[in-house]
Amino acid sequence: MSEEQSLFDAPPMGEQERMVEAILFASAEPVTVAELQARMPHGADPAEALVYLRKRYEGRGVNLVKVGDAWAFRTASDLGFLMQRETVETRKLSRAAIETLAIVAYHQPVTRAEIEEIRGVAVSRGTIDQLMELEWIRFGRRRMTPGRPVTFVVTETFLDHFGLESARDLPGLKELRAAGLLDSRPLPGQAATPDEEEGAQVGQTELFED
Image 1 (tube, rainbow, N blue to C red):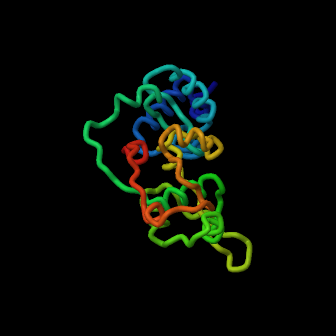
Image 2: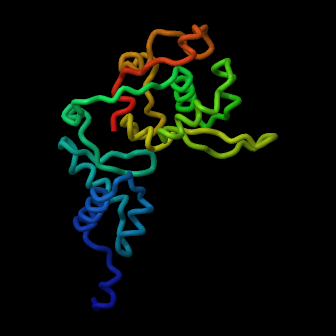
Image 3: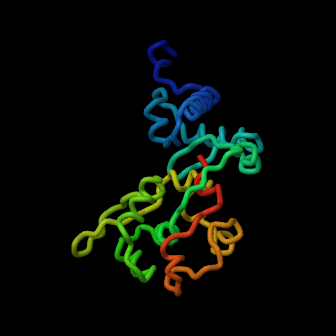
């Protein structure tokens, strides 16, 4: 084989794994296969390299996980307690925001009108803004209906924060309550007191840990 031909040969799979590993470790955000492909040599197969790399990190302190359509290294879920901070900042998420986030997550893509129909009350601009500032929801595609209303979907940041590969992995209501993310108060469509509607403090640090 000539030197010219060898320039177009894909690197050995072991070397491709090392390349993918290096890119993911250096990236602050999850990286898609397309992004890996663009950065790796001609003929490389990052998708295959990810399969081997993921298996190699199974059972270790750091795991290779899929976040939406992207990939990232994350601390093993059973070792998360080691990363907890001693000082926890208390922040508040209104009940309206919690309900809106849940509706978007379980019904996406969903329009503002559909959110309001499910909740039974109007959704304020501030509630949407708060969730978008947290980068937990984003604009989706416009509906092909009169007025072409915009839809909302959850983000990869949301999935990454809660350790989900996709929205299909969202837990059921029992699991949410067991994790402290929902309490026994009425859900959207049921009666709620003015105090509950105004806002409820979220004490679970999982919602806002960095």
